[in-house]
Image (tube, rainbow, N blue to C red; front, top):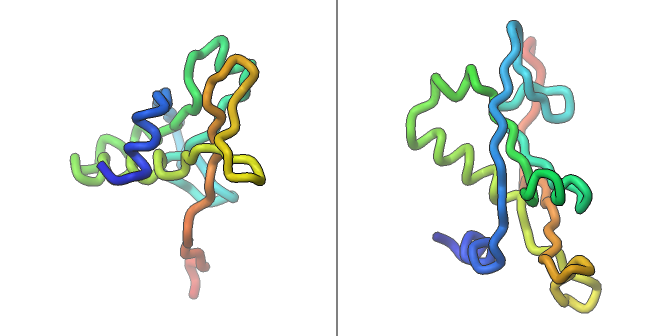
Length: 117
């Protein structure tokens, strides 16, 4: 467990997983490009009804073709997007009820291109 994971564990981050499938193509896209998974932070209102801080959508069809190490890497990648939200003074942001507030960070890098190039 690295320091990022330890911070999430201490603050009791709750993530849910949703399997997404479709008849053709990828059911999940990021910036218009097919993706194996994506994570999104739930609003405080959604948190009340779903009791999760974030939801990971996973391409159910592609999941079946992944090895266990690839599955772990995919989940680890999505969870690495989650960070503890801080204010300008560096203090942890919390909701009115005292619950930790979370932020989503973008990938450190990504590679894009064109099929014909």
